[in-house]
Length: 119
Image (cartoon, rainbow, N blue to C red; front, side, top):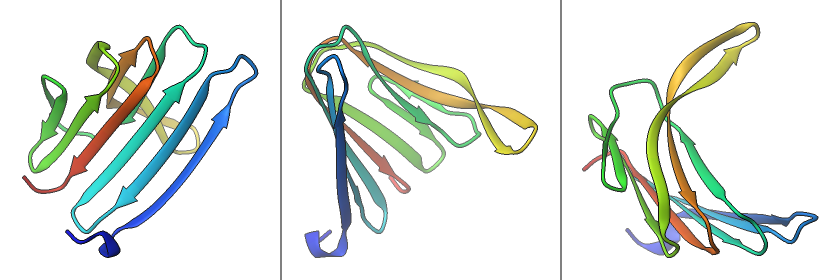
């Protein structure tokens, strides 16, 4: 896919303890790329992807459900990657369970997530 057919934006913050997070999001016709740069003083950082309801399967650093695939790459060692149950509330007073991918690192680095609608 050519670069000019993508839409991109970025934002970041620093907290009072010196931890920094910068996220760049790039959306194409069939893919979503997210780059998270984390640095500074912290013990643990957890990236969470709230996934659409369905039968997601964890395989290494990727999860898939049908034609949906989410892959994670990290320059920092991944301490834990797990598919867990989380919550969403799409309507006031109602909450439902959803699958959540959690990726935990303990040092500065870059986490890249690639979500694809077709394989």
